[in-house]
Amino acid sequence: MQPRRDATPTEVCASQRQSYDVTVVPGTDAVVFVSFTARPEACQGLEGPSLADLPIVYAVDTAKWGILSVQK
Image (tube, rainbow, N blue to C red; front, side):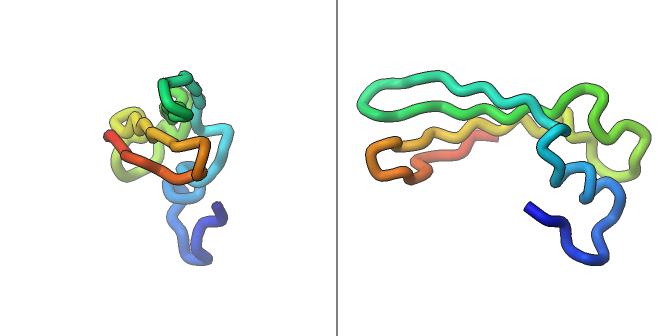
């Protein structure tokens, strides 16, 4: 994802893959759970909300490749 042209430094940092750790856990019935957690050192010292407050878990249907739910 590319940040918008007038993005703040925090928005630019938040859009970079290296700012997150990703974990995938298999579920049942072709569902996997994908967790994105901000790395502790990511975007430190920048203004705005901390990325560490944003763990996000997606439930993904791998048969239809759709997102079933999002938990923050």
